[in-house]
Amino acid sequence: NSFEPCDFVLFGTQGDLARRKLLPSLYQLEKADLMHAETKVIGVARQDISQVEYVALVKENIEKFSKEELCQETWQRFSEKLDYVQVDMKNIDSYKAFKDHVDPKRMMVCYFATPPSIFGDICLGLKAAKIIDKSMRVVLEKPIGHDLASSKKINDQVAEFFDESQIYRIDHYLGKETVLNLIALRFANSIFATNWDHNCIDHVQISVAESVGIEGRWGYFDEAGQMRDMVQNHLLQILTLIAMEPPANLDADSIRDEKLKVLKSLRPINASNVRQNTVRGQYVGGFVKGQEVPGYLDEPDANTSSESETFIALKVELDNWRWAGVPFYLRTGKRLPNKTSEVNIFFKRQPHNLFKDSFPELPANKLTIRLQPDEGVEVTVMNKVPGLTGKSSMDLQKSKLNLSFSETFKDERIADAYEKLLLEVMLGNQALFVRRDEVEAAWKWVDGILAAWKNSNEPPEPYQAGTWGPVASIALLAREDRAWYESR
Ligand code: BG6
Image (cartoon, rainbow, N blue to C red):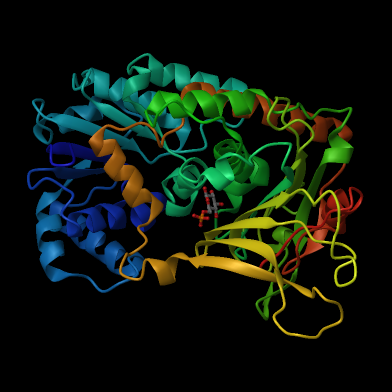
């Protein structure tokens, strides 16, 4: 359980992810009393710094990246858990340094917050230092590879040393409260559970918009593009939770078996249908929230001839019984007007309209699940306008049933996704982590689209920063008589 002590080893402790997210999240777990008093957090990096310097750096990061003032009492306890080992992760001999820092009798968690290209080196180094055993858990950060072949290679390298039951592949969206709530919403509420298929649902929109640009990560991002950075993982994971069949229980493999079936039923997009079903865009300069921002090709470090996409819109279909004929439209991009992630489920219209006088086109019900920010769930319903007179005997109005998390759960702090996921690793629960076959099924589908784009030789369409992407993404829905919904 959470109170089992462990050696939590953080490879890449000086990297962006560890500094921004992992160390502040571990600190929050300490604050919530969810770390055993004897747990140690061992940072690993190449820099030659002393223990005292390391602790000072961690403090600086937590102060900078936690959204609250440092709690001295928590910091005192947390800082006593910190340790630092200097390791050149590509040099097997240098892992010897480890031996004096970890306790072989304790469970060890190794978080690989490094580029995946050195996951294999780290495994070899741990083996050489003779500290691998069956109780050890390893956490891998996305992206696992840049296509199916490279992802298999990385997974094979790690599998040489660790069993799948020891491997925790992170997709931080699976640690977000609202993403987890999709499971509760669907399976704890019969009104949704029984209406969740092609008989009742017209289409689904999944939109993950960001107002930020590349934020100094041009090199990484340009190799990945929005497809590998966001769709292959976060958007497809959200899609699986919306589309999966009810799992038999909440065990890790029961859930992951169902998610895998969804990924396997994704209809391939290839040269024959790529034009009808996809739109790729790249932002040019514009204004976001009133601030002038440069275009993608004018960002620092940019390679001016890049054709990587920063925006994607897709029409996705699932070839299975439940979702036959129900399109899932996915949209995600950088430098869009604001940061909003949401799922919109559009139900089918009523077969006959009794209210033609006040509403010639009776709108369909819509369920909006706001993943972030202003987390919540909203249902649009039609109501009679109260009153004795009106345009007709039954004047209708569209209204919203709105559940706002911040109002309903006032006293609950919404934890960062990484806090939840790090806790789950320490608890040994794999349900919120992506299994190897899921990653590979996702890559297989994504590879088809990437290959079709490459063959088509068409550059991404420009869109102005601060807009909702290229006009073609609007047309993608408009030609099917639908429109993207923007709740804000
Ligand atoms: C990361 C991507 O996985 O997710 C980033 O690499 C992106 O490009 C980020 O900005 C978005 O995460 P969140 O939690 O801010 O929605």
